[in-house]
Image (cartoon, rainbow over all chains, first blue to last red; front, top):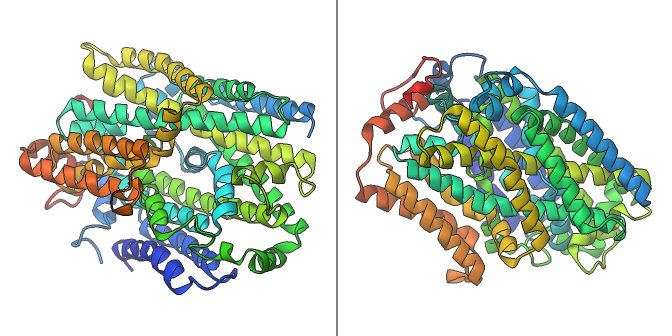
Length: 77
Length: 504
């Protein structure tokens, strides 16, 4: 999966931080409710960042930028 | 907890911290030819591990173990969600980090405000951004200093005065930032970060264990405080309050110069990656620990008059042996000082680079550095005076800090992704947006019943876009900047030239 898709994954996770605990889990008053959900989101954010930055290397900025701009449509898929 | 034990911990922390600060001195920050980039950016040669720990210590202040624990105590699990949204926002480093790094190398930027001034072709943008940062961050630093004052006074039952605590933390922050600039800040930060995470995690585990373990803790919460495990919970985290808190904090990694300046410093993108991932692992653990700390206080002491007392009460209780309590106290002191010294160093670089150098003719690198070193203790003394005076306005500006700084975000994102953005648009969004935030906080007004934290970003985006469209852009400067950042049209690999500070 490309870096760009992982970035979209982060935006979805952020959105879910509002929708899921306030919507689906609003009545779940236990550790497996909002607490567990936000824990899982935190871990997934770490995973997403590992994937987004996996092409960051000790090299010239130009090469890295050409591969790593996750907001461009026309970069590697 | 005895006074002798508290002072022993503070003095030991002072000696070890000063030792590390002196050992961190090097040619780039204390050699004969040291310049702005050397003193404030470590010559853009910082390694990933130290950068990660320092970024963590700078970001996480005394707020976590005191404020976030208190928020959890009062508002339940919503406090955790608030912090996790901020945490997800640090992903912006993965997107903007390489761009900051590339343009910093290419154009020789020392501060994020200098970057904006150059990109928009107008020194006023740099001056205004630097001043706005000072307006919000000096009060924020002052409140951190006051926090140390309250902590030491609280834990010693008043035997150590509030003023003594503030003086101790001010002196520590000045020394840690002055001795070797960013190198002493980063190395002492690293030491403090390790101390913060180890001490707080061990003691939180100990407290949870003494309360019967995780299962017992959450069973008790579910039985006696069920609302604390859902949102809106006890009422503090209504959806609009949650939005108002989280939107500005989501952009913290871009809006706050003491962390966005760090994007100029890594030796390579590999180092930047290590910084980011290292920070995320640290941040996740520290966040969970701080929230568990707040939950533990709620179970152990459910009837505290004020939620701010959750941490001091827990530390002074039978659940924490005195020696471990004083270790956590030193960890909280370290968290505060490591944030304050980074803010002071960044603000002094902004005032010398973006204000002094832009209003004074013939401000050479050497003169800028000299002014920066003079300004550093002045900022510290200002923060100290604000902490001592405890003015209402300072408290308001401190609370408004994250919201106030988010008005800079449209100009930052526009710099990289919108060629049509202009200096007038940037100035309008920062000045008018900042004034709107201050007015909303001072008056307590909530237009449409929405808090200032929700209004700040749309207001500044609207101003930036509308004023930019009404004024003429500088396509050459914008094009060169965006080409270097890799966001310009029809570019792939961009500038491969070495740093050319002469092009500024």
